[in-house]
Each structure stands twice: as C-alpha cells, then as structure tokens.
Length: 170
Image (tube, helix red, strand yellow):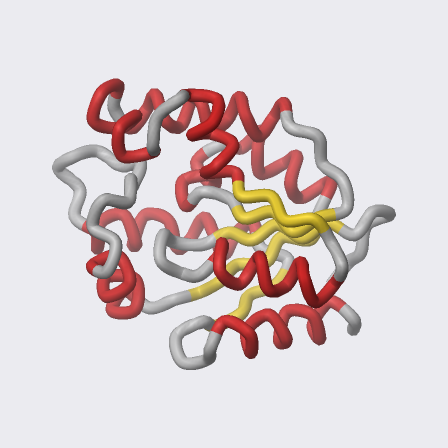
C-alpha cells in the first residue's frame, strides 16, 4: 500500500458496510481526525440525505456530494465517504491522489441486513433500482479505485479497524 505525506485514509463501500463506524474507531486508533462526508453534505444542504433524494432526486445528491468533496480541505484524517462517491471520477481522482483508499467489502446479504436496521438512510440511486442493482453496479467501481480491500462481513468494527491499521503499517 502506498503512503501519502499527510496520513489520510478514505473509506469507500456500500451503505451499511461500516464506513462511519469503522472510520471513527480507526481515527481514534491512529490519532487522526474523523470526517464523515455524509454529514458535511447534510450540513451544507440543511437536509438529510433521504430528504435531499426525496425532494430533489438522487442526481442532485450526487451533485452536492461532488461539490462538497471537491471543496473540502483534506488533512491528516480518516474520511468516511458516501456510497455513491465512486460515480464521480473527479472525486475519486482527488481521493486517490491525496489518500489511501480502503474499500470496506460487504456481501449483498450483509448490506441488505444492515440497511434494514436503518430504513430511512438515503441511497443515491434511481428509484427503480433494487439494492441488488445498486450493489452490482457499484462493486466494480469500489474495486477499481481501492488501494486496499478489507472484508467486513464477519468481524466487529474494532477488529476491522485493527486490520486496516495493520495493513497501513506494512
């Protein structure tokens, strides 16, 4: 895995893969700031992701996401990105150049179960797409952009953070 001058780790993956949960634990373990881009988007828009999608559509959410991630300062931190971040080549080029991109890989079953626990979560996809459609569309993108991949189906978030930390030290 390559390292960058400032220690920056960007987490990508499906909704429900644990980016925010693992990200907080990883940042704490590494002594870094934690940035949740979904929260930045919500702050800027003055609405939740689900509200943005309901009121303006999934493409509006992706537009706001791109603007927020292109404008935000990137310093030593763990960045939890939204699941749709991989649709923007500009964002992904920026993250690849300024951070180590780690894909939190979950199976469709894991993602479906975790999303069922938070049904109001906003997923930036056309309304006619099933979760399986979104999963099948995004996985190749996550794999393309990742510097490293960590499976997240069977371990606790703290253990996953440990795996990432160990992988970054190699």
